[in-house]
Length: 110
Length: 113
Image (tube, rainbow over all chains, first blue to last red; front, top):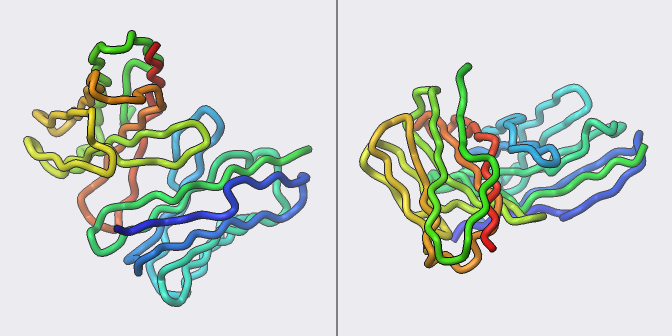
């Protein structure tokens, strides 16, 4: 069945450093979404990418959807302590079910 | 306020007891979902429903049951058949369109002792 993997599982950075998490699907996706879950909280939608090669930006966050629509990345420039949390990608494949990635936990040291 | 309400937020139960987690939404969403999250892990789909009186098993449905008698409500019962029920349970809803996002409730922490 469809699987969505994320790397790294955990990343610890100093405040001000950049951070990237990568998402890879075993099958082609119709769209991909990104969510952020703060410690002790629930996932909150960040963005959706639909087109092959699409790039979207939200302030210091840059989201990219691969040309083959099987991978995606989230890049945070100059991390802040407010960026702490787990970032999940979620891909929708042929079954139309949304499959969540394994998540990347980001820790930011002030 | 519009949103998804889960209750209770924290629940302790003895092993062998069934427990039901409540999920109510007033977003008028057709689809509702239950996910399980273990510490440091991703989200695994337990059950989902796209219409009243109909639901489908997700990836880890064994030991769980659901009902969808009303559009707004999608309760989850964790039965005694579930081998490792201690986890964080997240209810979610979305419009039916494939491009729509999922909105999550605040979750319910279940501890079975």
